[in-house]
Amino acid sequence: MNDNQLLRYSRHILLPQIDISGQERLNRARVLIVGAGGLGSPAAMYLAASGVGNLIIYDGDQVDLTNLQRQIIHNTDSVGRPKILSAKNTLTAINPEINITAVHANIGETELSALTPEVDVVVDASDNFMTRYQINRACILHKKPLISGAVVRFEGQISVFDLRYSDSPCYHCLYPFNEEQHTADMPCSIMGVFSPLVGIIGCMQAAETLKILLGIGNSLNGRLQLLDGLTMNWRSIKLHKDPVCAACMTKPVD
Image (cartoon, rainbow, N blue to C red; front, top):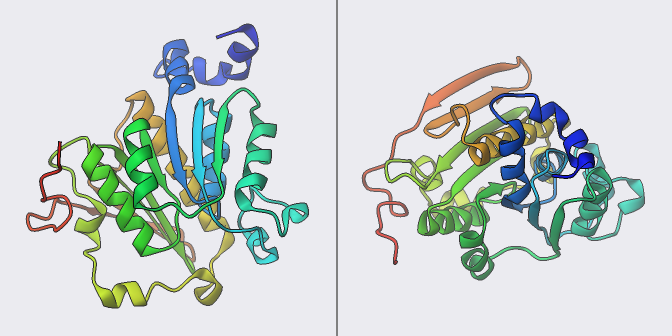
């Protein structure tokens, strides 16, 4: 690292769990973020500020005025522009020294198959079950850590599925796919969402990502954290691998 980088990341470097070697590891890391909305906004902003050297972000939507209540990576001048371009401008302003690959498209199985093997962590900041299942399958196949978050109304949740380990549960273990659930997948334009909750959960997704990249602390692998935004009470649920899971109990192809 040069002198400017040593100064920029000095508060990380002061932490013995990170130090210069850990910060250099972050600088080399590659993270895929799916979604540049409510969750993706704070997650991407903190990962960029923390010096994660390579961020790949997918989002196929444009900025709408209704997004600005919670999607803090965008501003009023961004309305009508692709979210991904607005997000890249914000992230570049935060940290011009990192590499940002911004793709204006909804990610699918083809893209996930190509990208997942090339990254260290996948952050699921999407807003629909079908995409979450596709991300989960790709992370199982390529044995990558998956940082999953979701918020609706006044309720938030976060978990880590560290699929580098054979005994880790996966997203499908928690939410087995069924057609009724898919048809009930209603967006926040119908359900509503309390804006600070996406900030809380998105920031936690960034924190879990950094911990995994650095190999420090205990991740949320095997735990689901549920937040009631009206009471600010947390519940923690232990997760176990489903022995009959249709996703992670199928042996991946080498």
